[in-house]
Length: 156
Image: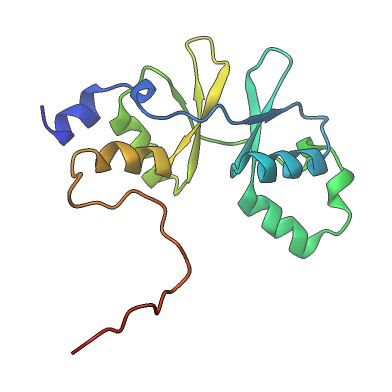
């Protein structure tokens, strides 16, 4: 099987699904922001009492709030969450994930089980890791340092 076939046949469950950060709608934005920073995530899933997603709150939304709304940190996250979001069932093919990321210009999609309960978050990073496994000698997947090194002389 090739990459194309695997993308069409393999389920999303084959990817590295992040358990994500979950909060109820009444949680303050401050708690969500602290959890995002601590867990190094980019998205909070806002879930109801039954574990079903009601919305999401992203780092992109946080940046917008910082610029426009001082004092928002103690407000309930439900005031600032997106109520329209993309989700994908854990048994859908990876190709469906690619379409959702592209069509809606997203970085994250909420993964749900057959009952609609949130299982986690999946995004571009998990997809890139999956694809890079097909090209191990062509794709560098380790974290790159932002530090520029001038230890060795370059050139002739």
